[in-house]
Amino acid sequence: MKRFLAFLGVFFVVLIGGYLQPVFFPADKMQQEADKGRPIVSHTALPYEEILTSGYAAYIGGKITDFVAEFGEPLEKHKTGMGYELWIYGEEDADYLEVNIQEEKISAIKAFNDSKETTPFSIGMKLSDVSELMTIYSNFAFTYKESSYNVELMEEDMNYRPLIAFDNKTFAILFFNHGTGKLSAVTYLDKKSLLTLMPYQLLEGEATPLPINEQLNGFDAVKSNQVIRIINLLKLKEGLPIYYTNTDSQKNAQKLFETLNKNQKNILSPERAESWQFSKEQMTSEAIFTLTNDEYQKLLKAGQSDKKKATGMYTEPIYDPTFTVLSWFSDSLYHSRFAHQENENIGVAFSKASMLVLLQETEKEISQTEESE
Image 1 (cartoon, rainbow, N blue to C red):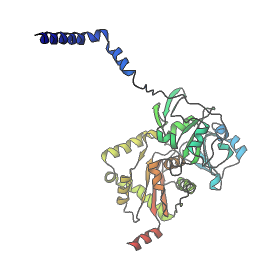
Image 2 (cartoon, rainbow, N blue to C red):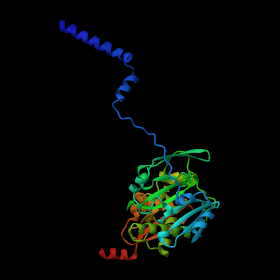
Image 3 (cartoon, one colour):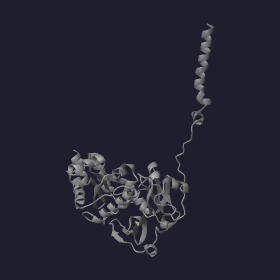
Image 4 (cartoon, rainbow, N blue to C red):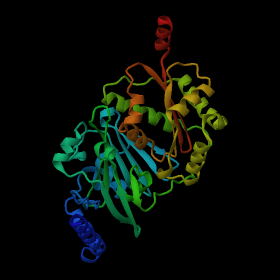
């Protein structure tokens, strides 16, 4: 009997304590006590710092006449059909430089040359070298034409495409080759160009639409040759064999380009076809459409390619072909397609804002393969 009464006593104490616990220990207070043992995670990014303007960065936004006074006239001038004119400097690959001109002012400079004008950066340096000089930031919040923008870099962006801000309100993107980890080129650009190219995530604001009213019909041989030169230049920097090009490789690329438009239903799923259409309607860097490797192989089959071991890329829209190629070589997925040690031909079909690249083994490689079989 005593044990039973003791049990009832304990039972009522527990019962009453359970009901009165919320009164003496509110839920918020209990949660605060529980949180004391957990690390506090902050998602607020540090404000980025601007480094002193130097070298090519000082010319961004400036008059092209000032640049010509310092560096002379370019070797080539091309109208891009994208609202800017492209000037090319440097006969040798080691001196190669591109300048984008809009309304007689410089909107971007793409430097492949190891010049004092790229200081504090130098072609061939590692990311660790840059980290010793400055902090690599993941978030950049700024205003442009009274609108607010917030740019976020992912881990791979910070490792291979970090963004640097200068105190004259311009930027630079450092492109590190994914194969060597070395700096391949520095792209200096103003806010408008950054928002047009936008290789990062936009947390606030929208990318600038690409102009389409100046586009010409047919294939653009000038842009195709430009893409081939940049690809081979980056391959040389990596110590890889350059691509060969001839009339047949160009015709094969153009044939595949036309095959994609004619056989879209056999190559793309309905969902992917919808994504492609969305890309055409948006015409911004945030809606880029690129064929997957499986889709590209289906395209090769539909085009009845007579070559073996063919691969390549198709993407749109493209605002700046050189910028796109630099992005490929800094990306693990795309870089692997250019990292072959075998001799290969290249064909590039460029039409309006769309580009197809076809990489094929050479006739010599094919004959060796057939003999081994």
